[in-house]
Length: 367
Image (cartoon, rainbow, N blue to C red; front, side, top):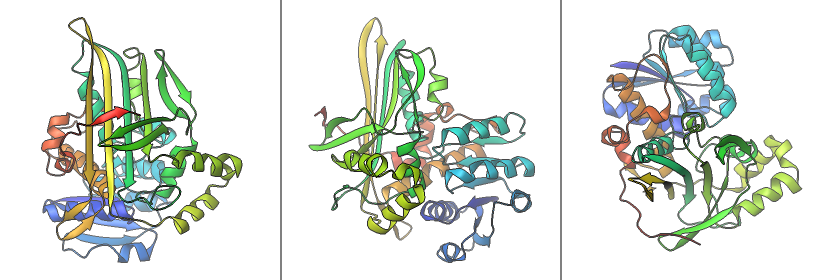
C-alpha cells in the first residue's frame, strides 16, 4: 500500500482519508495542528493521525519522507509551505486551492522538482477545467467558454440562501480577490461579485457572479484560442446583494477574520446540499457556429455507512481520483500537471471520479 499524508483534518481532509482508507490501497496519515480535529477522524486500520504545526516546513518534510504523496486540505495561505516541504522530501504534491497566487508559486516550485505537482484538484478549480477542456476538443475553432459551479443547500432557510458546506476561508477569498478572465481575446482581471446573471435549471432560478480562482490554469492554456472565457459561482438569488453589502458597505473585505466569525456563527452547516456544474462552449464545427453544454447536479449520499455532503464527495472524490491516476501511471509523474491535461472519460471511470457521473440536466434556460 502507498503511504499518503493528508494535511488538514477538517471536513474535506476527513473525507479524503475515509475514501482512501476504505479503498484498501492506501495507508493514510492525517496531520493537523488541532487535536480536536484529529480526534474526529474515523478510526480505521489504514489511518493514523499526527498533531503537527506545519508552519515549521522542516518538520513536515521529515514526516513526508517515504510517502508517495502529500495532499493539502488546508486553507490557501498554507499551500506554499506544504509544496516546499513536498519538494524537499521528494514526494508528489496535490492540493485543492483556488488561490491564484499560491498556484503560481506551486508552479515555480514544480519547475525543478522530480515529482509531480498537481494543484487545484477539487471541484472548481479542478473538475470544471477537465469538463471545459473536453468540450473544447470537439470544436475546430473556439469562441466562448463559460463555466458555472455552485455548492448550495437543497433547502435554503436564511436571507443569504446559503449554508456553510465548504472552507469559510476559501469562500471569502474567492469573493474578494480579482478574477481572471479572457475578454475580447485578452487575458484580464475582472472584479469579484460583479457581472451577475440569472438562469434556471429544472425550474429553479439561480444567480451567478464572478469569483476568483475557478478557472484554474485555463486562461493560460486557452490563451489566443478563445474570444471569451469566464467563471462564475452559482448561488440562489439575493445572495450576491447581501454579501456585497457586508464586504463593501460594512468594510468586512478588510476584516476577514470578523467576516469569518460572523459566517461560521450564523450559518449552519448541512449535508443536504447539491453541487451544480454548468459549462457551455460555443465555436465552429464544419463551418457552423454551434454550442455544446455539460450540465450536472450531484447530491450528498451515503458512502461506507456514513452520510457525506455533495461538496465533500465532489471535492474529496476529485483529488482522490487524480491521486489514483497518478499512482497507476495515467498521469505524468514529474513537474507541473494542469487539470485540463486529465482526460474526462478516464476520470469518470475512476472509482472516485464516478461520483461525478450524474445524469445530464436537460431543462436549462436563461432567466
